Amino acid sequence: MKNEEKSVSAALDKLRQICSRQEKCQADVTGLLTKWDIDREHHQLIIDRLKAEKFIDEYRYASAFVKDKIRIDHWGIIKVRYFLRQKGIAGEVLDSALSEIDRDEYRQMIGKELSKKRKSIKGTPREIWAKLARYGSSRGYELDIMQDFLGEGDSD
Image 1 (tube, rainbow, N blue to C red):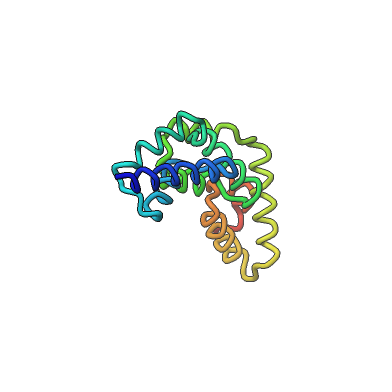
Image 2 (cartoon, helix red, strand yellow):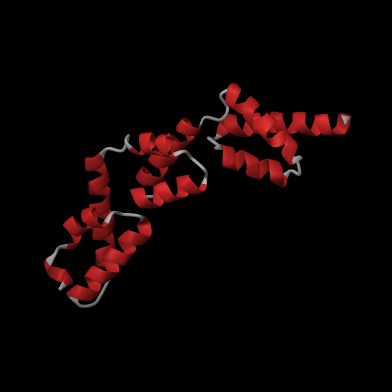
């Protein structure tokens, strides 16, 4: 029993260090605990402790994730929402984090990304439109926003 307590204590200390350097969500922490072979019965205890000590905060994590993925990686809202749901982030936390996005800045980012991609695509106007639409969809951009940059005339 003593070794088990040591391993739980060591895992908690290591997670404090990790979480102080980089935002982690509950799913990330659970994954690390599983990787480190910590008994599942201790997972929730460790997670509750990290939450109480403010090392884990789902809202803070979601907010940082949204900002990084949109500003740095140029992901769209659809892709960001999907990945956060995969991490088990609650709907209200997710919606709150997504509401922080500057919509004008977001639209400009989509326009720039589609414009950059358009320069590397060859084909008929219809093919170019289809390729750009697929590219934008794979990035998680909403079709109604992409439509403003793709042009309606090219789609017939």
